[in-house]
Picture 1 (cartoon, one colour):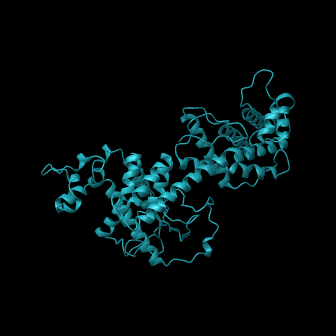
Picture 2 (cartoon, one colour; picture 1 turned 90 degrees about the vertical axis):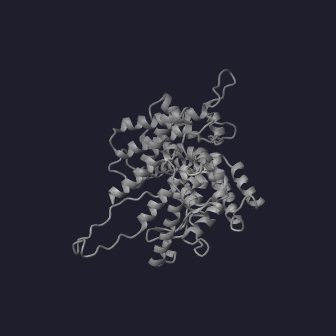
Picture 3 (cartoon, one colour; picture 1 turned 180 degrees about the vertical axis):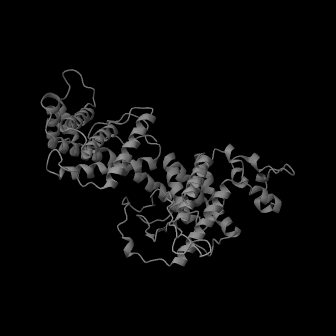
Length: 465
């Protein structure tokens, strides 16, 4: 992804790298959310007036865990990135590390002051040193900081750190908080908003395709459907295409902003590959074939554009199956196989999907509490779960079948009995044995599918269960 999101300022771009350090959009969003905890923690620390802290501040453990995970992600970025990390990322890492050390209470006050001081001084220097200035026309740090919107007292704090005695811990904590607010406002928040706007645009193309495909599932016979496929591919960056399509097909194809609520632990939202209309898309061969005809054109187009898409879609569907299985209530043991009154509770931890829905605006957090939602009868939830599992498993089988793979590798469709390439033969004219042949799974090890990863996930769930 070409980075057009720099550390924003009136006239400067601080990041010169042409690529971003994160491996995926999920990676960025998760890290962004985790690093937000740094501002929560420093705010709580500052609410404790004594210096050094007489006792551990009452910081939620979730905030500490999230920040630790965010810092781990930044460390991975640093080691895997072919370029230097953006200064905004480095500054966030330095300040957040100092905050965690502050909370731990393990460092002497003088050492802690030095840790904060180095992070603040290097942060201000890195932000203002954007011109590599030399000669008589060079601007002062204070004038550049003023243009960029850095408060003058932060510049004074940096000056004291560099040339005088290191300021007190209270001033350094305030400086760290101010620098974090600046870096989030001028880098992270703008980066996040830009990514979200791209996801919103891409999801609108998918929702249009979903609407048009209700009337016609054939791209060849529907110019508008064909145009919606082309528009989605051509008007969005490759990583955005892949990310939104995976979430759309496997997890959530709703057109409402925010997340769907959960009822008794059951996630109500489903991807487009699990159709909601049970009357049209019945749980049999005919219903599944209708679903395949509706979405095959888009899946094939994306796979042609991103040749890793099918493998990732299979992985997402496996995750979906695991999460659906995990949402089912444990069966009640019968007296014949379990001692009365000694039922062992389940301790299985089920991986949860990345939270992303297709919004009508940039507000992603649901403002509706689950308590205000109507409860769903248990028999209906069981029916929804059963239907979800049926279609998800059928799609996994289809995506590894000769029928699908032969679209991209025609040799896979060559029938061994007569040597005929069934891919060149109309599907409606396949004989029963030919249809059975095309439904066979191919050797996935040759296709680059992440079988080891998926087997590991399934084995982990089986072991924990």
